[in-house]
Length: 240
Image (cartoon, rainbow, N blue to C red; front, top):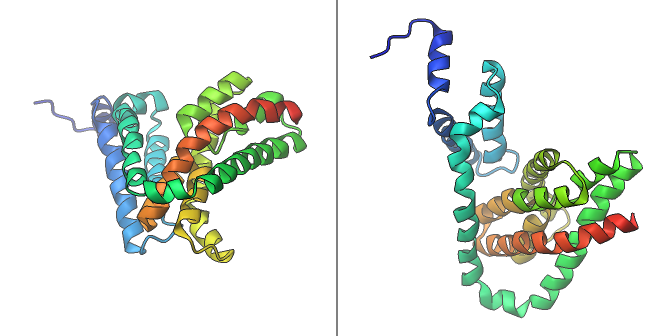
């Protein structure tokens, strides 16, 4: 067995193991989830945010590049597909309610997706940012895989879009509950739809923690927003 006495060499040895960063990512999220439970699911104690802080701190302190980290953590990335498909289950369970609300859903989706693009791109243009940056910001409320594709087609920078998508999701997951309480939106269907529309997967995860009906509508909004934004974003950027 290999003997390692130097702590720095020990880290190098660990970092060479393909599953180390996978384990680090899972443990960081479990720690975040435990903290979230301990605070009675307080919006600020978002498990994703806590996990990002833990993993990011480890990478910064050890000087580990993202490419090296992703070699092990890519297994989590692969599971995003099945996890997204699994969101269909709460939608199916609440399909009768969703069917009755289809007119409101369509209207809210078109308006919400349009406002999401216009507000982000309009603010970026008002700040004098480049056209490429504006295109990168426009799809920030869509789930990452779709947002990066939209950004690339619009002439944006997909990695920048990915960062903005994650930031939007975390911020949305933190703000959605206190904001809905502030404006006195009590209906869980409306609260969940807003979370999925504005904060994609992270907002949907937050909605599922609160209420299954909210989670079903959040998952529906997240899926539809990818389609609607892909259609609307090019047209709205031309108008801007």
